[in-house]
Amino acid sequence: MNFQLLHKQKKLIVAASLIGLIAVFMPWLKVNMFMINKTVSGFNGPGIFSFIAFIVSFFICIYPAEKQQQSLQGSKWLVTLIFQGISLLIIVYLIYQAKSVSSDINEATDFFGEETKKVSKGLLGGNFGIGIWIALICNIIGLASCWFLKDAGTNVSSAVSSINIPTMPTIGNSSQKKFQELEQLMELKNKGII
Image 1 (cartoon, one colour):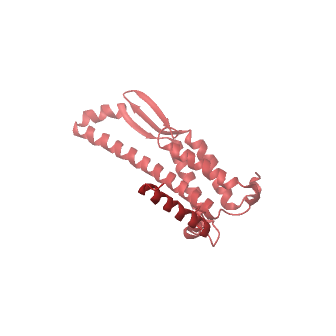
Image 2 (cartoon, helix red, strand yellow; image 1 turned 90 degrees about the horizontal axis):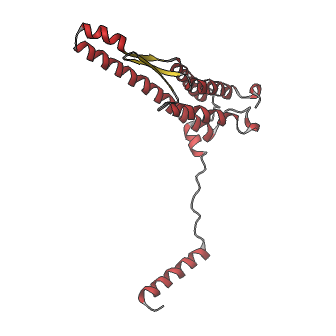
Image 3 (spheres, one colour; image 1 turned 60 degrees about the vertical axis):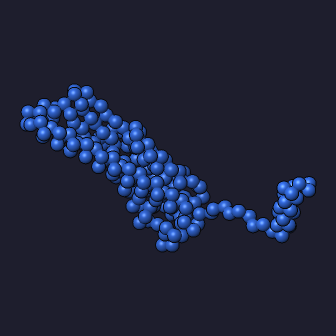
């Protein structure tokens, strides 16, 4: 793969995917509970989907080698868009969930008074690690470059129509006759003639 020959859209997605892959292994959440400090990386839990999304986006952009100078088109564009979008939604949901848990802890300590709040401030807490923010930015860059740097003729409907779904073969005259003969044989067997 020659990075210089890649299309601008693919360059951004490849760079964001590589940085995002590194960010998945960085701390996403730092939790301190009763003097025990724990960091959780993105590779634990739902962050694994971000890892998969970054890998899929990377390989879609570099394969096949002869089409690296073109922007993403058709089903490859759609798959990259979907994976990046779902990964972005998961990260935003994780941030929202962590914020709501933090506010629940604050409400619980407010209920027990000011002294409890002072004690719990040192015992219970958590904040986001750098990895979740880097992964969020990489997803936004990947999604934006996929959407805004596409060719003029690329859209969702053309991408969906470019997906080749195999269909059942139609039954021709000879196959239809054989099927009718088989039905007649089944009827004769059921009547006890055969």
